[in-house]
Amino acid sequence: MKDRLITAALAAGALLLFYALLVPKPQHRVPASGAPVSDSARPAGYLSIWRWLGAAHVPRLSLRERYTALARLAPRPRGNVLLLTLPQRVPMQAEELAYLRRWVMRGNTLLVAAALDDTPTWTLSTYDPLELKNLRRLSGLQFTPAPRSTTLHAAVHTPGSRSETLQVRSAQPLMRGIGTLHPVDSLIERPWVAHATGHRIPLVLATLARDGAPAVWLERLGGGQIIVSAVASPFANAGLVRRGNARFLANVLAWSRSPRGAVIFDDAHQGLTAFYDAKAFFADPRLHDTLLWLLALWLVFVFGTQPLRATRSRWQAIDETAYIEGSARYLAAVVQPEDIAPRLIAGFAAEIQARVPNEDPWRWLRSSSGAARRDWHALEQLRERTTAGKRINLLRLQSILARLRRQLT
Image (cartoon, rainbow, N blue to C red; front, side, top):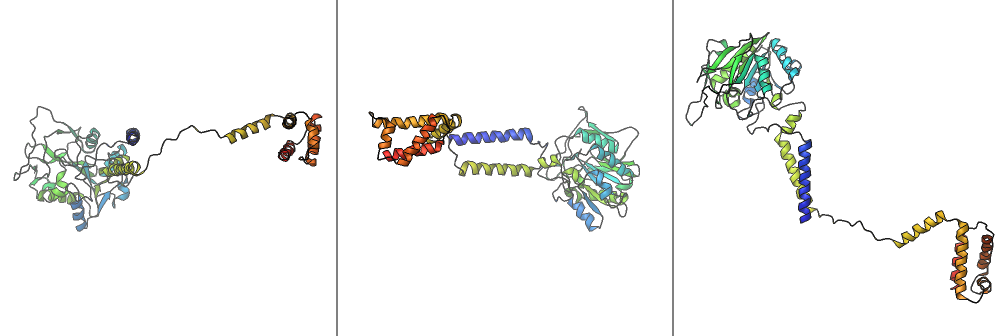
């Protein structure tokens, strides 16, 4: 049991080290309420607009590429409307920002739904400064934190209470037939103050009813226009059911879209991409859940069903046969045959001398009836060659000596 616990602890430590060093870390998880994309039926999604446009036979497009693909994917070069939502899960690149400006200047409309004054559940806790900088370059509006001395308050919704609204300026053509806009989510303490930059002065279309602060702007850019809303929830599924919100969107499309222009949903920068995005991939909770399940099943399989192998000892007993064979091979490789033959013959003579101590071993061998005449005669010839210093066949000598030993036993 102790070995299993130690193995499990080491395996877990190795996996944690691998995760800490090699796996990219997601900056945030996908909120449970979903992202504002065109195929989402949740309160924050845009499926209601998608179906509404389909029923009205208005061309629609889910953009799942970078902004640089707009000219290739849009059915017409001008007269299109792009619905862009902030904050973005996949930040736009610098080249995308420049291309988007040129696309608007060619005669297209950019509708920016920025969650600045409302609190949709899919938004992040803080805004990326780069997103605010990109918004300033697009719209000419610079959003800065409100001073601490400003009196701030938050809308608190209670059952039966009336939610805060946006008061529209009815003199504007885009606001005809609209009394108020109704954010679905609570309006938080106003953290941002909008300022026009340089000579660009956007037209204010709607203000917050509680303090008169601007909340919706319109600015011309070349042959197109940019509409910026500091509240994003009126365009979502939950907000579109309210008459003022739907009327405002219908006015924007009727005024800015050409007869064959398309309404484009920026799904790519909310994580619904057709291209590989590493941050979106590693931020997807389904990947993390899958890895955790695989890890849990692997641990159950290894430590629950597989027996742990016993540690094998490195000590092994010496094989006498292998030792003798190795020694013999070594001697056969380094000792010359001229030196081995005399010792083999002398050893055989010593064995005979031990049997008949008072006789000459070679004379006794010739007269012995137990030794074959052919074998001892061959041994005599080999002994004479050895005495003369000539080379002999050691294998033949060993065979003759072995036969004679058997015959004399």
